[in-house]
Length: 242
Image (cartoon, rainbow, N blue to C red; front, side):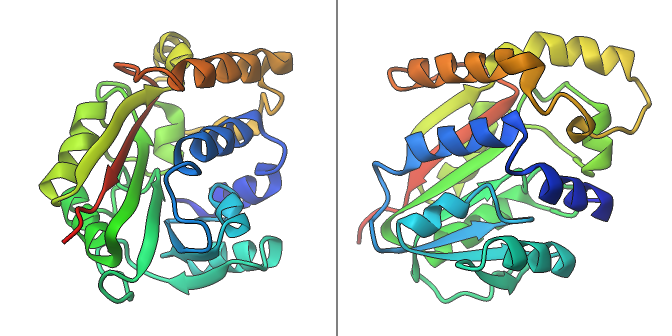
């Protein structure tokens, strides 16, 4: 990812509707199934805000490849424990964390094999522990923002679930999210064909709160069911006991 995008993230992580909606959904999905007082690993933590809420529940280790991003995270979220790490070769002992969170990392061009990375997550999580994967959805979509973030691939929810099951994890949930954004994202991708632009440069308020309201309504739906598609794909999986 370009360093300018990390700086945008740091500037908007507390105010942009997308980050607020992402944190709210992650908390809704994960808080009921993680171990309070445990050790949690945020892989590709970036500037730290997405998984920062996990520090309320236990010890949070924030791992990222970019040292400047880790420095930003340490400044803004001092309760996190930052480490420099490659997602495919984590400097962490086997079965030593209670949950792994990975948000928009497997999509990056720098990740040669998403399956290899998820095998690493399965290695470091304890038996009974949880792995949460959240990646850009809709495989055929290619957006200006993807070019800024060096996104090399997008996932269907079944693609992501397959990565988890191939790593020996038991899939608990496989769902799309932000489904209401898929039609406008397709239109936007046509209008911005060939462009390089960040989504964080505008609409921080989510069209006057409209998008935040849609996200809140979708979270209510996700309490009862999985969605077949979305601008994001999410898989929750557990390492088997024994």
